[in-house]
Length: 120
Image 1 (tube, rainbow, N blue to C red):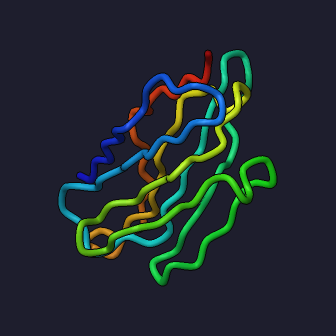
Image 2: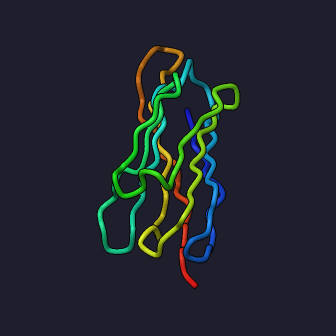
């Protein structure tokens, strides 16, 4: 099985910065795209950013220019550097990864989420 464990959430003031991390562990052949989603209270989960194994990234318009996604393939870890945070960025942030198992099956895995609260 593959597990994703997020860390780095917390309380930050508007305009501040925060770094989220998500590490994959378990038995797998490789990891493809890694993504961040978020879900604000009372809202549906929404896409935030994605990065493929080669490092190409894409972002939701709402975070473009403020957030940066990166990954360390050697550590099977994806990061989300969040800057110029706004109260509307408050949400539970979820890590998602497309994993290729040893059997070559493809499985999409979700982390448990980490809460980011932007408030003064």
